[in-house]
Image 1 (cartoon, rainbow, N blue to C red):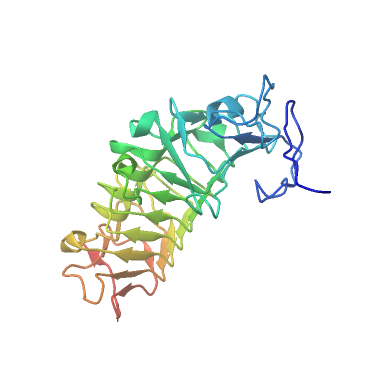
Image 2 (cartoon, rainbow, N blue to C red):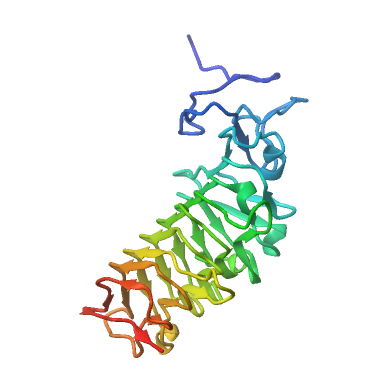
Length: 312
């Protein structure tokens, strides 16, 4: 062949297996759908979201095609995504995965709602059980949390899995948030892990209200506005999750007792392997506070020193 001819596509072509996505289809009985807020494809192509080269434009649109309990996956491609309204999850066993790219904001997909003026996800209690959210950089503004456990079904949101996300951790002002995750009521079997909560969070990285069950592990809380992880009293069911192997960094927050982890009321979580520091110095106040002295505390550190929690 004397030269290289350009391929011109005029109809929908199945490019599955191309380098574009970089991930194979998951093993699931459910649907696999793709979303990208940018314009893709050519011509008047009917987009059902099943081809990554012809994705749907919003996560909410894709979620409308999913079936509760079916294990459906929604992959958000590496473009900037901005849904118009909060993504309200009221179906079980859904997976929301941001696919980062080595060429574009690796490893997370930036995700806002209404240009950062509202929570990104609201999880409707038991109606959103077994939800998975991973691979996103999230923001919500100074009055909202990025992910909110909202009312719906029974009070308990079980077996949720939130991992490999960044909350309030971008220098872009749109990615500020009051809390990273605001969780009311139960969370038995739920897991928050390998996430970053940054200094654009104005209050708490993870804030629990009337909470019991679940675990937070291997997360970084980098100078959050008030506390890294907090459990707020609100009723007889108030408790605390297990907090294992998290890292907390403080600047101004180090002046407040319990700035890393604060537990209240009938908390009974196991808290072990956490490390809090202010760079190379020891923070001025104890980063751990157990207001009722009822949690199960293991070995936690302040800078280089093993530290028991303060109690009131």
